[in-house]
Amino acid sequence: MSNRERIRGCHQAMLAAGIQPDDQLVKLGGFTVDEGKAAAGKLLDMKAPPSAIFACNDLLAIGAIQAARERGMLLPQQLSVAGFDNTILVTIIAPSLTTKGSRSRRSGGRRWICSSRRSRARNRRSSGPC
Image (spheres, rainbow, N blue to C red):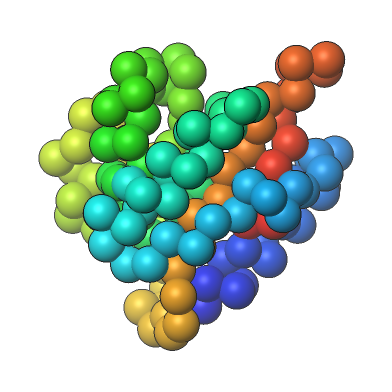
């Protein structure tokens, strides 16, 4: 499954839940833990940081967890993180990582990291197209 398909699926799920995507909450994340950490850091340093991050692979998600921990955030109380690929790495990280397996291991191009921001007015999430 390509990254574009992953982003499109997340976008469709958000719309189905009545959540309006926000393109400013979609960050290019690369392929590594360090790149995920950097991309998530940009999101978490926003004036209104997200309450959830979906990363297009498990390494990016692990980087997002590291970025949150460096900022003293409690997981999953203050930030929910989900990955994609269901790799063996998700079994060794705490708290455990929510991940989605893929039937196809082919995925070209760049990986994306997306997030969700909690709407304080309605106490529900809104996010970028992921």
